[in-house]
Image (cartoon, rainbow, N blue to C red):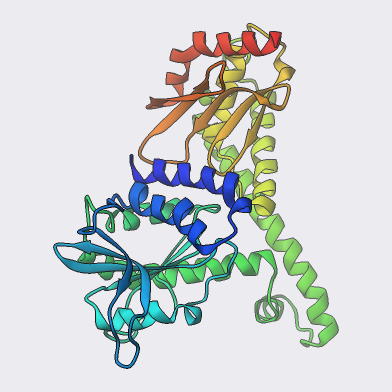
Length: 373
């Protein structure tokens, strides 16, 4: 199982089980051990690869343990400290991880609550774990940019030198992205003051800052919406229009292009609130499946809902009537998922959108069955 698919599966499991997890031990069993096994590729039952409750005495501290030590060639490479899935992550609350980092050969420390994984190294001072992570993975808000870096820590392609060489850039670029995201979500006073001084001669009084705080919030939202609109129009008019089929199988009409563009913009606005990002490719795939399904049902009955793990095409906007699922989040491989009568999904790899037509008969069969249920 590849990193992308492993993370997708864990993300779905986390959504389904998170609320039922009550303890740190349950968190480790349900989420952390599967992450070590299915994402990083280590055998959690092989003590030559994974040592639970790892002990390394440190000065006057005797018998303290870190939750997991990942081994390679007889040396500790990663240390993992776990918290309950509901707990916030703060390196100050991971004293064992901090101490063990300095008395082992490990250059990577991981602090996790099963949902969010913070990866640390020693950029600021040798053999002393940094206070801030160089890599952050949130299974409920996945940034696919980190996949290549995460791959360097897997058993199959472990490359510590490469990770350390890129850690500084990852640390600060990631931190800056998170700061920018916060500023766009809720502009801070310094950000508001900076922009205000560039557009007006008004003094930065409390009343003016309050006014411009609201104006900056509106401006950033409008700016993002306009950029999305421009990108979609540009892509559609440069040739991607062919990816959005008309219901009769011919070329897409301007109305369909407009509808797809507006749908994508609405999806972007939804993403601002939920973290779910609907792509042009997912909407194009939806149009193809809708065109196929129209041989069995009226077009208005075929709808879609997006999630962070897959894009669902539904009959009558009902999650219990799933026609197909598009798994397009992975950069290395795309899949179309078809569900059988028992709701069991089979994923089929596809190389491009046109491959969806290879499953037209299966899609029609599913639609026909759902329409008569």
